[in-house]
Image 1: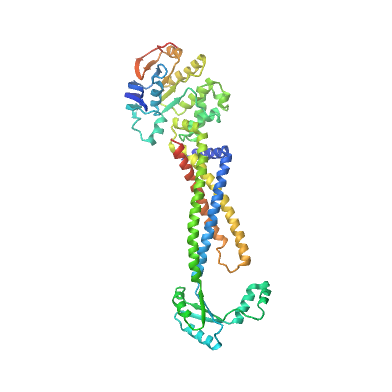
Image 2: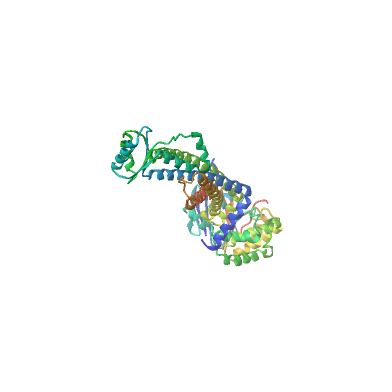
Length: 295
Length: 228
């Protein structure tokens, strides 16, 4: 492709987008909205997955004791836990300490605890660290059956729930994205159809003077790709802004929550959005070209 | 240049447009195709640039069997042809210059070659001074001259014209024919369908008459032969 040919394509594409001003605007907007939703879903999905992985990698079991357990029994419990295979450390958390920790976490809202009076609702507990995450499933049932144990909690239980949530998200996301992709495809192919119609005389003359099929198709294909690309640029910008705002909000209240950071996550999401937008644009015009441009 | 052998065309629905047409046109010839309306002239002309395909028979253009071409070879075959219509078919949103340059752009001619060649051709049809005008600012005769410029700008071997003077007054029609004569004198073969008795009779060229889909007359230095 020579330089003047490329120039020619770019000029024609630009001219055509301007001529179809309103439809071009409508196409870019639809692509933007669709990809915005796609981007949001992608972020929710990525974060849920990340959270699940984070919890799965935890090597800690928290063992809550019944209130009836006395100091001697707690002492014995600590020894039993240490004797379990793969246990690295056992830390006893007394009722008073648990309450203090909770106070710290509440910070300024500490006075909420005054409602409890002198009562301390926190149980005695042990924080048991194991060597590898896989160990937890082995020893958790054993711990459960030890005397005076109320319950033994670990991350994997939540992980199961999270994974079923990811499955639902994935399915719902795919359905929604498919639906939106079809809407986007439809409107882009419609725009290109109008372009083809507006330029049908030109196309006929091009054929008569011996333009190749691909020479005739390129400007239309480029128009669709340009529309898709710009829609994606807007969607990408919006998703990035929304996510970084949301993240700073969440961190302000839930600092320990393991969310994916804005960078580099958004770089991948934005690249994905740009790729999908341009591809949908190309596919949309291709559909129209096949149907309406018999070259 | 052109060799048609046993060409017939039956349109869907059984309408027979051409029947057993055989014709041989030498390079550099100027051929008028005449005949009553609906005789098959238009079908004949359209077959030359593969707009209409015959039902049976073969067509060789410059030695190439144009019916055996693969779809992607058709554009290259058309680059050897210049096609001119009764209704000019210029692009209204482009200047005279751009209308002619368009034909060179779409076959990917390098930029620097386009300008010189387009101005040359506009000189040939006498419209260089109107290069920046738009088609609707020109008379019918001028528009047809632009269409001719566009048809010959890529140096075709064969120029195909379908009633090129049909929308023009007799005097303007004669001016147009003057341009065709010049093109022909430069060695380009011309096949022209026409209804214009005066033009055919004054030019003294080969005349092929088609009636009811058959060639009924083929004469050197022929005349129109119908009441105009």
